[in-house]
Each structure stands twice: as structure tokens, then as C-alpha cells.
Length: 124
Image 1 (tube, rainbow, N blue to C red):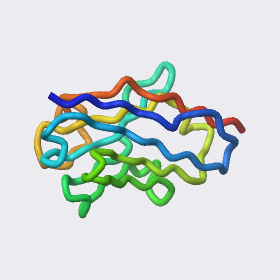
Image 2 (cartoon, rainbow, N blue to C red; image 1 turned 90 degrees about the vertical axis):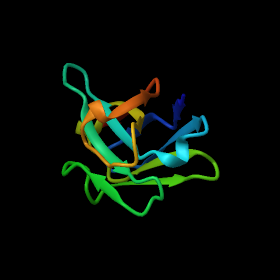
Image 3 (cartoon, rainbow, N blue to C red; image 1 turned 135 degrees about the vertical axis):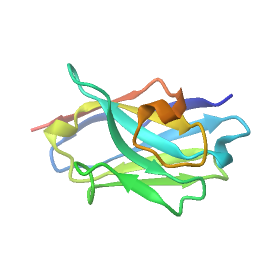
Image 4 (spheres, rainbow, N blue to C red; image 1 turned 180 degrees about the vertical axis):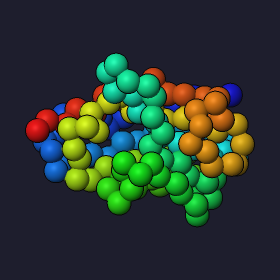
């Protein structure tokens, strides 16, 4: 069992930055890949980024590559998403997710634990 709690969302102007955090509880955190997804109003859920259990490997959606950075601190059981150069189209609810295994994936069906989400709003 893994419980995930996101924080760090808010309102920011275009070009600004935010850092999202996802605090995990449960003994299996260190054995799982982790991911961030987002969902904008009226749109389907979208993969944002994923990270391997060690943090050595990462993967990003093309829409955020070069602007967002995913990282993790296994000692603190926390995953981060640093978001720079934010754009209005980044506005969404951002969800942290724990994968079913060590495999990085952009597919939401490979994640079986989800946080409650944190709202990110980017004004133009």
C-alpha cells in the first residue's frame, strides 16, 4: 500500500516556476518507478514525466521536455517536479503516481497508486 500526497501547486504568471512535491508513505516506495500526470479541464489525462526507482533514468513528454525536471529523494520518500518557463497551457491538476514495478512508463494503467492532485494555474 502506498499513499501519495501532492503539494506545491498554485497560481503563477507565464514564464514563472513552481516545484511540486509528492510525499509517499509505505515501504515499497523505493522499489517503484514514479510518475507525474496532469489533466486540464475538458481534456484527458496526460503523461508528464517519470523516474526510475534509483533516479538515474527519467522520461518526459515532449510538451515539457527542457522545461520540467523530475527528481526523487528516496531517503525522504518524496518525488519532485520542478517546472520552469511555465505556459498557460500547463494549467491543469497535477497528479503523482506510483508504478506497479520498476519500469518507467507513460501509460497510466501501469500506475496503481495515485495522489489527490494539486492545481497549477498559469496566467498569461
